Length: 320
Length: 310
Image (cartoon, rainbow over all chains, first blue to last red; front, top):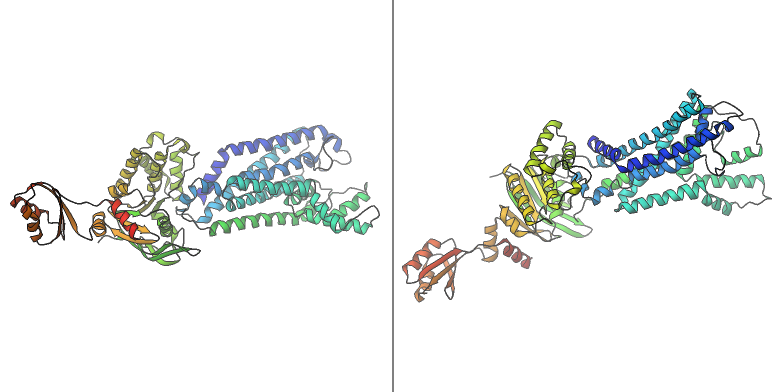
């Protein structure tokens, strides 16, 4: 497996695809740092706690209020693209180029091919994500001049880990499509289609969770608080089907220590009591908050990989 | 007797009711170039895939160099090279890098592999372009690189599936010569093709596969005699001044079965090669012997004959 892994890693790192992805995410990082540079002073008023984390969540004027802050928005936009780009032609390009049958007649176990490819993609993904967050943190250190506290460092490390898991899910999905579909274009389109659905319709503009909530628990101005909570709860649950929502919530809880709950109901209630004392959660409590999200994302990635693994292992090589 | 490198017993493969290979009994000896013939869809590739352990047989057994490919595919793949019909290389890697990858997959020690790769690139005539990307290679160059690719692991047995398809005549000659030199280095070569004259040129033995059955197997001249002359030798004689008594006296020779004549040509069927005695008889008569030859059988005729029967 080591030979496959090494070759795939070398291929990735020297490919144009890698450069494009890196440029894309680098631009996002520069943009986010730029916004932070201009707006961070306005944000840091009430407390000087966790100033460093503010880097990732400041949004300037004119940034649409419904969206997550710029850096989180861009990173949750680009990580899936990266994962898909690294995985969508993993197996089917080997097949169409005629390398697969040559490869499988070598004395290696068949799963080394898919494992090596997946692992190489994962390493590339980790390199990109870690370096981008490091770039923003580095710029941030120069801009604000406040070094991160130990808790902030811990939160950022977990942020990187969660992002890698999120990317791994999209890559596993793309690899799955590359096993299922013979044409690289089809598997790319299928992955992008699913991503559009999960990202835009379930997370950024949650039209589908809202439609389902409206249909099951319709509310109007006269509805009781109970009805409203139920309505919001259903919307939240449906939204969490999407890994994008899971990631967005998990990352928010990590970089916004003041976020005391991810329960949409509690969030709604807390807006009723806006202006209450803001206290931040300790790291362990934030971690506890995102734990289910983390496990769900890991499970989704594992399921996708397991399906592609078994499909690939059972697939019969046939004479054409 | 030479050792058997491939031995199959009633090897059968069914795909959803369709039988691709049906009760195949095949023996291939060490060191020969075996021509594996048959029209498209006859089951040649399926047989190879089963011998490599890439596909499981529905029933029957196969032995490759003493290993069962279904149970020990890795051991088989270590000593067997396979060049698929529609193989490809990594286009953005150079010829050398592609071969290096194969050597890494085979766990060859680095230094030895480098030396082998250099030697092989020279053997297949690609030294000049060793560090060019494969995407710039012609089809013929890729085929030669393909041969180097299976050669790099120094296999005991090489399966070549249509290695000459789609290349120019000069390229074909190169590939055929390389296959012969492979055999000289002790590699048993199995050459799948329907390019009959190429098979005839280099193969010591052929097997003809039709609809999953092995319809004929053996050396080309033996197959020819069986197929066309019902196991007999046919001698063709050209004479001038045909002596009317000649045909009768030829029929007197022991072993001659039939004599046909048309103008100055005589066709003599006999049990064995009786050219000496036939010549003597003609010289002893009033006829003048111009030419005498024993009929050779083209693989094409043999092939067609078997397919008319199958």
